[in-house]
Figure 1 (cartoon, helix red, strand yellow):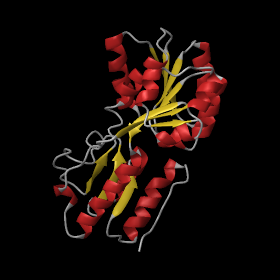
Figure 2 (figure 1 turned 30 degrees about the vertical axis):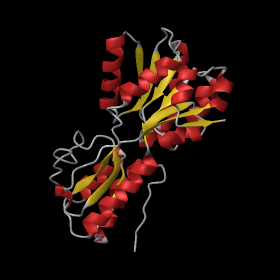
Figure 3 (figure 1 turned 90 degrees about the horizontal axis):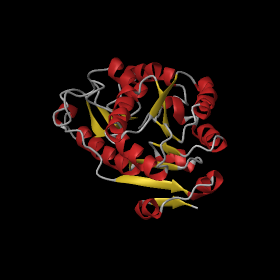
Figure 4 (figure 1 turned 90 degrees about the vertical axis):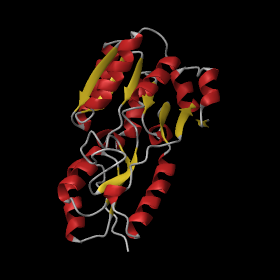
Length: 260
């Protein structure tokens, strides 16, 4: 028997949902790696085993003591989203190699991502502009700021705040004629231009292996957190056409999926 729960695009609901599952005395909790969800689960219980299906930064978030030795009730898989931020920026600059600044659209929980992007840009002399969003009502204004700053491209840092706004962000990016890189493939499926991330389907498959081991008696503290081994580059040629953008052949040849 399972007890599915979802925040329906409202991150503030996670603490109540986590507390409810604890009251039900479930044997195990499986959750996506959003920071609000993992933080709520961490606050709600230190005893119920929790399997992360792609946590953004399990060590930095204090969910585990280390990837090799979790030491607590969390285990599962890391998304390596922070570590691959620089790679996403590199791919974006390969697509838009001019000297115009890249806007980094992020929420309040994404400081490690911004720091990773800054470090990658600093070594290459790229200009970045950070636009921090606190609620969905600020998204449209952020695009106006990006246009005023003569930005040449946009890097969207994935987070719970933006995921329910994927189609809206893709539409605004097209209207602003901003080539945009995303950290998860569903943004591209919603009309975005390009994404680079771990293969989420494979991560959820691997999460099932952790569930099986724990239900058979293994302790989360003793199960090393796995890092993704497969990453995918997704490109939406329909969106490229709308932007009047020609995708370099070097990128097309490396793409795992091209949406036409």
